[in-house]
Length: 242
Image (cartoon, rainbow, N blue to C red; front, top):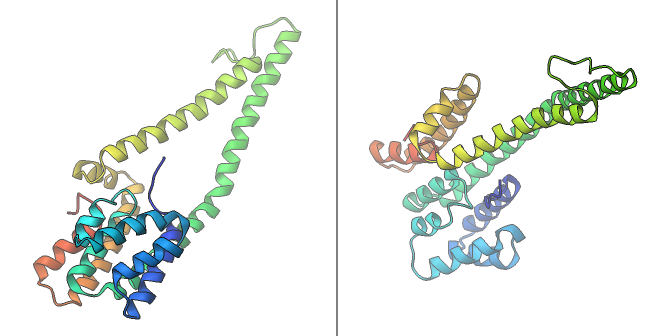
């Protein structure tokens, strides 16, 4: 909510541009300057700040730390890895493929969950309509609402039912986002998420995919196994693994 982070299409486009232009021999400063002038509108301001910081002589690691609200942890860790290993173009190619796969899986998930969500919404409104109808019938007969278990009936009862259902869902989502932001990069929060049945196995699979991707790139550079493991664990973006 109110996130400044770049979207997946923006990240894919950025990785593609950086891969092509760095492979052609352009410097990172020049590429970022071009993106600040002619890149996607959502990235121009960030590219301008990065370009100015590199021109001042700031390290890439310090520059990215100031923009951690814009880039995802994996992107930042892999970019720092590319700076230390000199394989920037290859890393952007791997990131492009990774984010394309993530975008494909996200779209697949949305398409498969659209019908169940639609059925749930329709069911809640049908129940609300039944409550409204029962209250109307009860008012015509000067009787109490038929749904006496919850005391619901009429328009007020129907709205109360919808308010409880969707208010609970919104509160749960809001609390999850708040605790996720408070617990970001904290081992206890990541450990808690990994221990949730169903969700934990999916998150562990995503984390391991990031780890193996980073480990492949680090081992190909000739780094020591200790440094390669540390950089790869940081690239997961999961404090529990780190």
